[in-house]
Length: 69
Image (cartoon, rainbow, N blue to C red; front, side, top):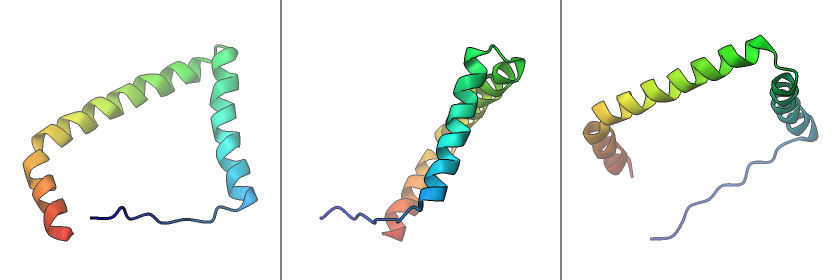
């Protein structure tokens, strides 16, 4: 089976917007902004809950993925 790939054209403005968001967090980390600590705390919780959901519904989701192909 071949590998499927799709190319999405991203405009210059979209690239600038993405980079702006990433750099804002980076600058805030360097300046020890308290909001960054909150961001990282909730980001960690997000990934924990996502892993829990993935473990809980692994069989059903993998079956659905196989059936959709």
